[in-house]
Length: 242
View (cartoon, rainbow, N blue to C red):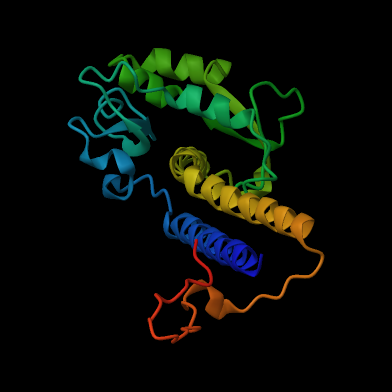
């Protein structure tokens, strides 16, 4: 009976140890990732053949500069050969608008597709990305659709904050990259929870077998030293093993 309890205690010790190791590793991976949108090398899609999906913003403000001047960022999604799988900035912002801001402390403001009370709040224009992606070099059409709000999103940021379009877009794309990355490493968190669950189940089974548990950590690593010598030596008996 004592040997069985020692084996159970040894297994419980290993389960807790593995649980804390995987939990620490998961938290460490989360803290190291910044999801920087301007540097493709920081994203997991960097090593793919076509690399990451591009996002465009800040198009030129004249017919001559419209398609030639723009700012490019990247999301953590591998692009196919024709980029047909890459979402538009409009789609990414719309997805972001449906996510509550509380779980993501790096975005403290809300995004709305339609908001009739947005007169004094900042707006985000995703028209540049759509026109650049479709290679539509029509600056007049771009201006008309921007004024109509066809690609516009309102936010809860007051205009007194400055309404920095590039900062808002960068925040949204960074959030997208963080969600993708977190989904890739969430298995470590589940593995940690599984180890702790095994510990609880093992503890419950042990408590059912005995109301008192006397545990010595040496039981996990030390073989029995009771060796009798009655003329013939006996093999040492293992006290506890997982």
